[in-house]
Image (cartoon, rainbow, N blue to C red; front, side, top):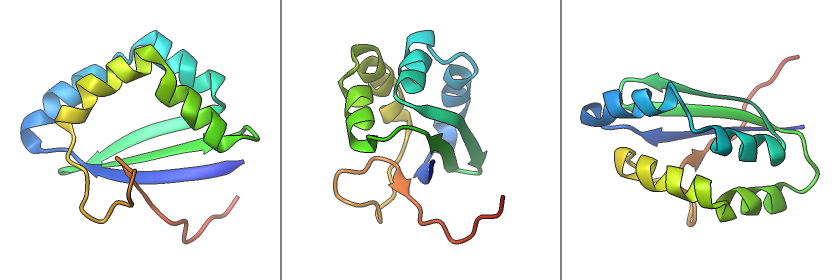
Length: 107
């Protein structure tokens, strides 16, 4: 299992709309995540920062991420969500959410 944590900005003026969407995520988007071996997915907010955590239980992470990115319903979801978010300057090339290094874990 691979644990993924990432962050992105959420301007205060977009908070209510972002949270409204995430109170009722589109079912086909959730189905695609499940089909791509994403589990235990959460997003938290602290001020103007979103923190995302999920676990990947598959064996082809790049392939499963490509399947998510190629999904038309997910692309439509992202088109709605991306204008609400503010990527961080320190993100890597090709990243939207900035992936964080794991510093500590305890089961």
